[in-house]
Length: 51
Image (cartoon, rainbow, N blue to C red; front, top):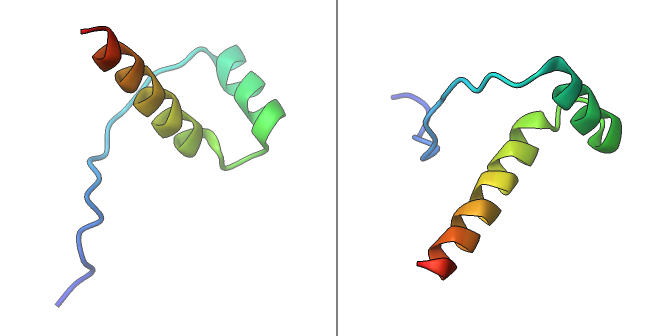
């Protein structure tokens, strides 16, 4: 028995240090992954609407 799958796949994204600092300055520490997930979902929806 283990932990149930969360339906997520880990991936590595390389961002400029300044970009990470800007995100953390706006949202606080430990919010980077959530911000990236939200930004990707928003961009996918935007592009899907255009196609």
